[in-house]
Each structure stands twice: as C-alpha cells, then as structure tokens.
Image 1 (cartoon, rainbow, N blue to C red):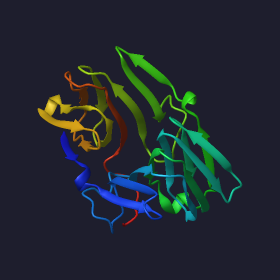
Image 2: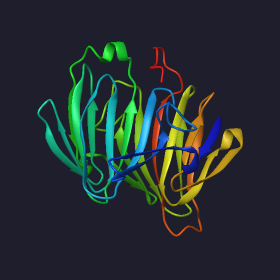
Image 3: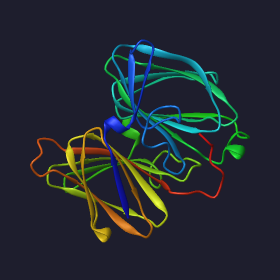
Length: 257
C-alpha cells in the first residue's frame, strides 16, 4: 500500500473570467503546474469557488464522463440537448458526453463545487449519444453509523452509475472516529479533504500520513488491504472527505494528456 499526500501548493490552479471563479485542481491538465495528472481513469478534479455569480459560456465536451458535485451553493446548467437545470448543495450533475455536447455552467455567489472527469474507453464512448442526468442531495443514500456519515454517490447502491469503473463517497467523520475503506488489489483511492483534520493509515503496510483541509491523498493497493481515514480526536470539527476509488490501470488506452 502506497500513500502520497499533495497539499494545495502542489495542486494546479485556474480561474474563469477575471477571477470570478477560482479553482484548485488536485488533478489538473498537463499544461498546468501540478503534481498529479491522473489517477488511472480519473482524469481531472477541480475544486471551484465562485466569488460572484458568473456563467462559464457554452463549450464542447465529448467522450468523458463528467460529474459536478455541489459542496455548497447553487449551480446552473444549460446544454445543446435542451436541458436547463439548477442543482444545489449536495446535488450532482452528470454528463456522459458521448459523441459530443456543448454546455454552460453558472455558479452563484459563494458556490463551491467539485468537477470531476472520468475516462471510459474513449473510442467506444464517442459512438454513444450524450446523456445528461441530475440528482438532488435527497436522492443519495445516506447512512450514519457511530456518528460517521456515509453518502454514496457513485457505484453499488448509489444512484450514479458510470461506464468508467468507479466508486465515490462523501464521508463526514467526527473527532476521534475512523472509517475503514476496503481497497482491492490493483485499485487506487483518491481523497480530497474538504474540512477538518485527521490521518490516512494503511495498517497492513504500516503507513500513516496526516491530512488537513485542502489536501489531496492518493492511496494505491498492490494487494487487498484497508485504508483507515480518521479524524483528529482533538479537532474542533469533523473530518469531511470526498473519496473516489478507480482502477490503478485499465485494459484500454488512456488519453495522452
């Protein structure tokens, strides 16, 4: 088991307009200064924050599966398939862009969201028609066990199912508590800390790293094992993380960034 932690100063940076929207990018494009360019088929991950209401105008996408997950606020969506929608805190927009679609995004003042790109087999994906789906917070299963909140977003028993092999959860872990993620052989776990402080541990490999808000962690498993995410027992707030599991390698060619 291998654990790498990338603080904000090792992540990509971006903006739209004159800084109306600013971004930190745990996984960025190749032309941007960043420590991580992909994790298997997890191609791109941006944390966008809107300083004022601003629309990113119509622009094209094809092939990739794109999930916009709203941490706080409201995001508007319009596209060339005729969709005109809004989604708010805890909700998600999903574009399986297929043969191609153009869309625009409007982030309202104070909105924060993740935009995450997954890469299926692109030569097959571009032969499928584009699809847009939207989910409100209440549509996602939410379990609370021993004070730990587990929200299932993508994967088994979750409403979003992608072509790309992937699983995504939003975890809120109170101070002193811990959550164990079973990571199979050949898979990686990508974790962004949204708030709070804690640790990432791989007990079988005697690996341990600290984690705080804004950090990006990548954990890779050479054999089946456990990843333990724990919140600082002396912390003033819970550790909230969004975690995505994907294969470390896939059996199809990946886009060369």
